[in-house]
Length: 112
Image (cartoon, rainbow, N blue to C red):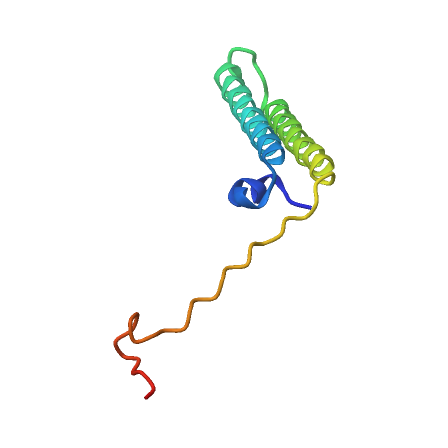
């Protein structure tokens, strides 16, 4: 079953509904990442004001990272459930190039 990234990289191989879901989950993962970055930035900004020691700060950073990782993993797992309802894509077969003829390739000499 495809991942969010696979669907977004090869959109022509998947149904429109699955592509829409992939985009929603991708956007959600981006939002979680942005919120985690903002939380970390605020923590750094206010550490001295809150008299947070290094151990507490490291613990808070670890929690921010863990929460972000769990949220992203949740998006991936939810998308996998949705994607499981769709058949595997069929890779379109590219038609073979036609054989060259004297009209298309001057190097080909007609057989007489």
